[in-house]
Length: 302
Image (tube, rainbow, N blue to C red; front, side, top):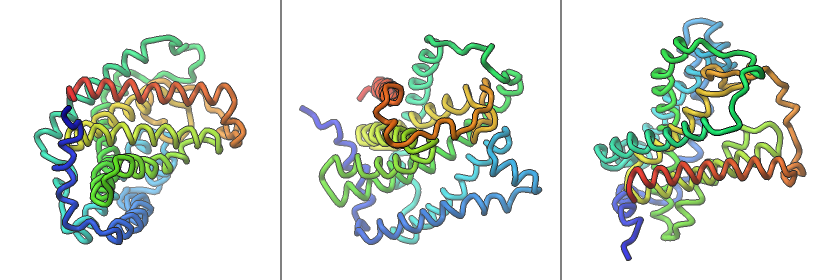
């Protein structure tokens, strides 16, 4: 029986020459610092105080786009750190460029089509419950710009978690659970803050950890980051461009907007994790990851 992760050995080879644990720890600490600085550095480049306010609020189209474009600052900072600590460049994290481009396009389309099908299934959006439906023409014009911004955001996250960390941990341990789970758990922990309250935050962290493991699996099967970026891009595109809540962060690009609700209404404590609604929400989110992963597997035929 052939090894489904045979391509992974070639993918991690660039990391073998500088795989010391101290380099990894130094990178994680330094990149966290760079990431924290990326927003204020990006804000300095904005032309006015109004633009800066919109950027930090993230509720308008400009503000949401600016937030995702700001990931480019963190990405550039990471590549400088990569060169400094490891003497490596971007391609060493991506894998064969032509194959990565091919897999990115195939997986993004495959996962996007599946998500579109799911959007068409009940329960359907009831327009009577909406506060706003944006002008479709204006929204459609923004979609290509949004895709570029999301590609920068997703690409920055993937080159760090599925590129750098997955390669480095695979050099430190032969265990699949080490290079697949540890970076994904770190990725998941960052998504805790996506939720309102401990219960919802925990659900987001679990979901993101499983999503990270799906992306890690695809990366190991293909030997490049294309499929992971494609899946992540399709997921974020549908999450941000279709439905949002007025006044909530990153809602500025959504076509359909529900009325504003105080996030504190959903700030449930840890005990709420065992409630039927929270369990159902987690199960449906994990099923969506499984569907996206299967669609990606079909697209790459591995």
